[in-house]
Amino acid sequence: MSETLKVEQSSASDAPLEGGPVLKREMGFWSSFSLAFAFMSPIIGLYAVFALALTAAGPSFWWGMLVVLACQCLVALVLAELASRWPVAGGVCLWSRSLLGHTYSWYAGWAYIWTLVITVAAVSYGGSTFLASFLGWENPSSLTKVLLGAVILAISTIANSAGRRWLSLFVTISIICEVIASLGVGLVLIIFYRKNSLSTIFESFSSPSDSSAYIFGPFLAAVAIIGWSFVGFESAGAIAEEVRSPERKVPRAIITSLITVASVITFSALALLLAIPDLKAAVSGADPDPISTTLTTHFGVGISRPLLILIVLGFIAGVVALQAAVSRAIFAFARIDALPAAKTLRRLSKSDSLPINAVLVSAVASMLILAISASQVYGALISFATVGFYIAFAFPVVAALIVRLKGEWKQGPFSLGKFGLVINVAAVLWLGFEIINIAWPRMTDGPWYQNYSVIIIFVLLGISGYVLEKKLRKKSSSLI
Picture 1 (cartoon, helix red, strand yellow):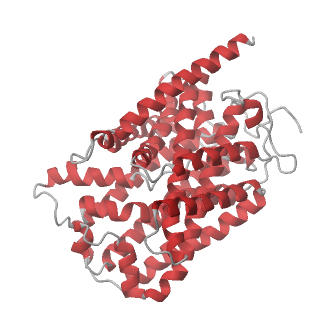
Picture 2 (picture 1 turned 180 degrees about the vertical axis):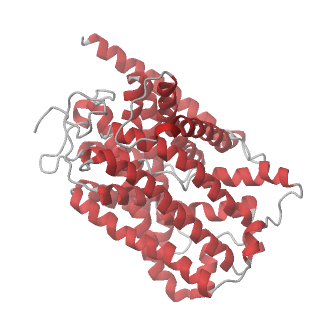
Picture 3 (picture 1 turned 30 degrees about the vertical axis):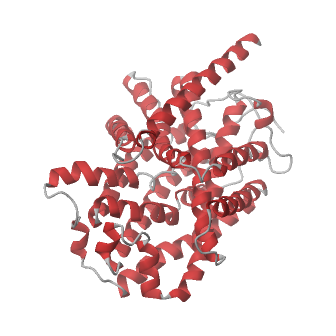
């Protein structure tokens, strides 16, 4: 296999790397899109935030989905430009390196890799609840959830190691299941089982009487929660090096996956809001699982088992896509000697040129985090996983703005043209706002370490990253 990195790109693009093992270009637009679709996962995005956002802001939280979607489109457009110029493995990490250099990008990669690793553990643990229900295990213990989460993670690791064709096939089948379980169920609910009027989405029930107090209180809290659902579109760029003619296909996959998945989640959320049998009980928290209650009420217990299969497959597909993205990020960093044991981590399998070692390392790291999921520390890790995506996005988006302001920006095959600067500025402002919004300590009744968990973990990862980066830089200098 050639040791020279050859990136298929236009003359307007700048290759960020000059050498290293090369991933095979065996995927097309559909593979890139489907991986991002599975990463975002309508099932995970909907089930993870619906009850929380409904309790936080009432039915009018639904408008927060439109706000987050519109603002995330700004980010997607900027990242699509970067993917067009640098269609190589690593995505967020390597885009940052190409714009502002190695040290800047190292912290982008450090934040992104840990965010993905933590999210893999979180989604595996979340899927374990539905897997337990499918197996007929009521009220599973924390240990049982951890073990079932480990099973989901093991299936994902096998799927990511079996070959790109098997990975694409698995993700495609899972997408079909996701569409049935989210869009299909939503259509049936909104057509045949409407219990509440459309005006419901303008109500908050327990919100402050002052509209401004509601917007800057419960509504912003809902926007912070919803932020978890509309991330993952950037993963289409993480596998750009494995896509044929990626300069145009990958940007299209990034934008299309965000709009498609967000639209499905938004529609399904509306259908559920209009079909909930006891909306006030759901808003107050008296009904802790309004989705299950709604489905059981309208479809009966008999339909729950087939739906559970679809939901479990959706969670597995999400873990597969997440692990694929983090393994490519690890491989990309190892290829430029930016991680310990880089030589091992950048090694590819002989048959399919897959970063198997990176896949296994990501699995082990996620398994360790999964093992502590029964403790209070896990809640803090989940909070960081949400804000971690926005912090990781901020690195390349801010870097792109700096390069634009210096007058050094070069257009790729996909370009925003004269609107590039305006969209870039707006994307930076949105990311800064959402990072603060998510990290804001709102749990006034909880322990201080939970209330400030995002900030604490961010500082700890920042310090550990600083120490490791210094050691790697010193080691690199000693070899020159």
